[in-house]
Length: 399
Image (cartoon, rainbow, N blue to C red):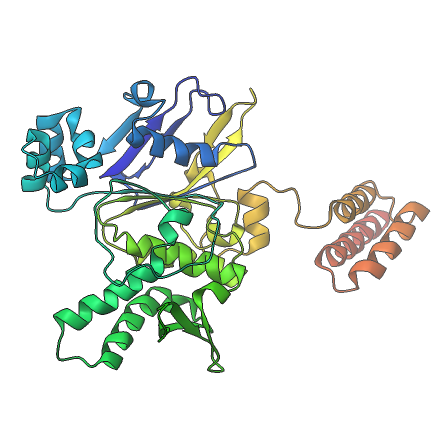
């Protein structure tokens, strides 16, 4: 299941905006939504979740979201129509009741992979995590929000995983079981080349996930830094949900992450599950610089002040570009410099263009900036080169 497109109608922020999640006729596995504050990035993620949640906007949105279904899903949807999503939402309840409901039985007997909607909001309250059980019951939920309630199960999930492998692979020693689970978890983060790694669970009654750094120092999951918590806990929560053929809605994954982690966080999410559609809302130039321009949806304010989608074909290439270029050419930042410094550089260029580089204003301003920026500043060097060129042109004219 994937989203092909959305057509908003009279939305408070997004008005009648249309968003296309396809490229060359196929739904993109990854879409990164960027834009200024207030451009509606979070609204889009929440809007998608609310559609499937059947709350508030459902009837209003019904004709507004175009969904691509896998072959088995399409057959079921055509047969069940409106009850398809209802059957998914209360599937576990039907299952526990041994229900004979037709919609439930159709889904149970004909859908091998049950899709999920997973929403990861910006704000997550990372309360202390405890291990409640080493036999965490695996239940299917169509709708999932990564919040404090869900992440509280992470320790139990890891302990349960260790117990499961111990019971199913009896030839492994306890140490080998712990190492196997550690490899599963650390493999997701391998691309980040982290200093810390998951090494197992504490040997006391708490069975908390334990991490170790390159110095061999160990600490439990609650002692991670804010950035490490954002990275490990958010990601482990998604892994715990085991998404396949699902939709992941991730709001500002860059929060509290070091820039080098931001550059690779999308690849981390891609390693979780199979055949998922990932939709990310971000302000991070590091994330934008890690994806192709075809995967970017840029929201801008048009001449009528309404939000519009800037055609990705008109964007300059994003993949591998410097942060400065991303900020200026894609995110529309006038300059990455301090605004006051930038204004003074602009004024210097104006004076050069007007041939006033010998005037006191230019000399004073140039001296001030050279003291602040140094002799090797690119803009100051270019300004000096422009002056030399203008002087040569004047010399030729006077000959």
